[in-house]
Structure formats: C-alpha cells, structure tokens
Length: 429
Image (tube, rainbow, N blue to C red):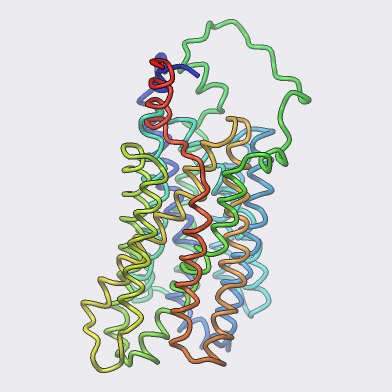
C-alpha cells in the first residue's frame, strides 16, 4: 500500500461538487416521496376509510421491498453501470408518488407503495456508490454525510410542513401529483451530469485519450463476494440492533408521547420534530468527523450519545416531563441513530471492498436494516407494548443499541487518515 492514500492525480473537484449536490438533492426528494403519506394520512384515512393499522402496513411493505431491492439493484449497478439504475429509479419513484394520488382504496395504495420501495431501494446504494466514486479520499465521509443528510431534513423535518401547507390550497390527491415534479427535474440533471465510474477514474488519473479495452465479464467480481469481507458482514449484523432502535423510535415516538407521557397533540408535534432535525445533523456530522478521527471512534461516539440520551429518556414520566427536555433527548437519539446508520450502511462497507463491489456492499446492510428494522422491529415493538406496556419498548430500543455496539467492536478501521498513518509507521519500521 502506498504511504500516501490521498494521492489522486487531476481530481475533478467540479464534478465532485455536482455529483454530491445532485445525489443529495435527489435523495431528499426521494425521502419526501417516501414519507409524504404520513402527514397526509389523517385526510387519506377519511376519504379511503382506512385505519392506523393500514398506515403501519403501508410503511412496512415499503421498507421490505426497499431493503430487498437495495441489495438486488445495488449489485446490478456494479455490473451494468450507475446511470442505468439511477435514472429509471428516479423516474420510477417520482411517477409512483404521483400515482399515489390516484389511489381509490387500500390495496391500490399498498401496491403503489410496494413498487415505490423497489425503485427507492434501488436508488439508495447506487447513489452512495456514485458519491464515493466522485469524492476525493479526504472527503469521502463528509460527502456521504452531505448526501445522506437530506433524507432527514427534507423528508422528516420539511416534508410535514410542505404537505400541510399544500393541503390548504389543494386536495391530498394533488399534493402527490406536485411531489413528482422535483424528482423529474433532478432526473434531468442526473442524466446530464452523472458519469460512470470508469469515466470518473479516467479523469482522476489523467489516463490517455486512447480507447480503453472493456473489462471482460468474467473479470468482474460477483456480488456475493461481499460476504468475504468481514466489515460488511459485521455491518449487517450490527444493523439488526441499530435499526431496531431507530425504526422503533421513529414509529412509536408519537404514540409514546401522547399515550404514555400524556403530551397534547401540539406538544407531541413539537417534540417529534427533534427526530428530523437531529437526524440531519447526525447524518452530516459523524461521517464528516470520521474523516479526521477515524471511522470507529466516530461510530462509538455516536453510539455512546444514543445510549446516554436513551437512558435519560427512559425515566421520563407523565406530568413531570418538560417538552423542551424531551425534544433535546429525541434530538440526540436521532443524531446517534442517523450517525450510526450512515457509518454502517455507507461509509465503512463501501471502503471495505474493491470499487467494483461498492454498491453491493452498501446494498446488503441496507437490505438487512430495512427488512428487519423497518418491517419486523416495529411489529415486535407493538406486540411488546400490547403485552408488557408501552414503556417496555424503551428497553427494547436500549437492547438494540447495546447489541449493535458490541458487534461494532469487531469492525476493522477503514478511514484513509488512519490507513495513511499506519502505512507511514510501517514504512519507518
């Protein structure tokens, strides 16, 4: 290994900026389309005669298809190229969001959301790989954080505001129609500016203009080879606990605040906003700081913040809880949740494998996290709440965080700054 892992000739900083910005904005639009159904559901349920159980089912089916096809289409993009997956997926989730406005019943909406999970899941690991490929090694973590942070900011923090303001002037059907426009605009710019990995590498290394012979199909690694890499497997296992914590937190917080802590609807809305804002800062901060201090120190900092905040949240009781304090605790739990998710689904796995396997390495942890965390964990939490009391779900979340922390102890460091120091020390020895 070279002593200078940051040596990149003629890196295209302008392309890096464009690619990261486009992947960031598009992922934010994707998040808006995914979560738009939640703030619109009170009016949808009246029109379509639905229940809260239907809402849980809609969220669960999208998570499961998202997870499965994150793994499938991530591997496909490693074989056929990024653009051939990115562009159809963006068109797909944009149009499917619009089609949600045409739903006339639960089964129609369920089918639309299931297919939306397919294309949104396919987009996610490919966008991460595209961001990594465009980034200078010194800025990988920072750029992944920027790209992923829009999910919380646009979808969870701004999405409910956008939806409720649009409802003042149009029906919920037209809100879904309007939501398709930003995605189609993003698709145009992705088509215009995003390059394939070989073109990015050619520019970075100042390769001659002579044509490059195509890589023989048999020379390309199979997606299943990601299981040979220790970090990827550990990321998948750790996410069983981390996603259980975070998806349970996201799904159960509103009812926990109103039914257990006895907050009013207005207070609940204020306190819950801490999740979206905290998620934005967590997704941005921890990958960025990991460029400086290493991936594992940043990851354990995030996990420690989550455990401490949750331990302070558990003793909160009805009638004695300050909404501002609850907001702060949820903010720090979301900071931890999104920070640990970014490190385990994007930063560490993509650095642990060869470039040809990056999307697969990101897609598989996303698959495990979405299927188990989004599909199974909230259902388990609901069962536990029904039979052991609502307060018991906090211990389920704590167990998930502790489990994830133990698994992460066995990860290997991948940060370029750490590898550079290790290589320099080895050279001096």
